Image 1 (cartoon, helix red, strand yellow):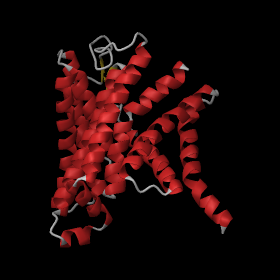
Image 2: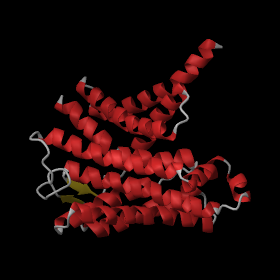
Image 3: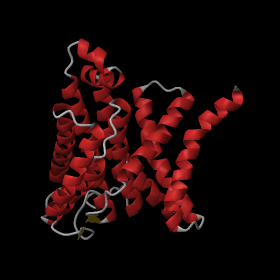
Image 4: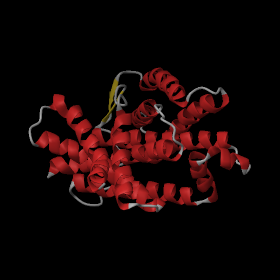
Length: 289
């Protein structure tokens, strides 16, 4: 059970990145590759500040601002310089590799012996269950804040920008500002995942963000499939399903390893699972017709 509990905890750590990908991909229709760099940036800032004996509550706003700046830079390059969003994300991600290396000062930084968010509060004796409670509260608060934002007039304008940019622009909304804000928010959430995972796994690594966008995309694809299956229109339920997608994604990886699959084939198994989830509704529809 500890094996699956660890997968559950990792899924909750990655839930913030899933929410970030959901905002950039599903709300704004922007394939944001900045994710790989901003995730590592959040982890690097967390790791270096922990080694300087800063409180996790002091580190948290710094991580949010760092991730938001990375996302805003991508948004500025895309909207003001009129560069393709995918290319803008790649450029910022590439630049962030050097920034992250400068922040860390080395390729790997252990922090397992330092006070963290998960060992600073002892709600119950079992460390894994204690971590589960703390991270669950953290994720619930983040989800509530994002859900509340998306229900405000500003959030509705953000969603309308993704649905029909020309229409919302005709209503006087600055769509460039909306995109910049949306990408800043998405990457702030991504950096939060780096903040959580570094404290959970006990180290920050310069390569920790390589391919991490796939984790977020897989989580969102699972959530989107469930949303389409059950015809969900509620923002709150959609966000909960995004969180569930992040957890399911990690549990599938854990199950794949538990049944003895070669770790070298892990990515292949993951791709097959996501393909199956995406294909099932279409297969069912074709059979019905």
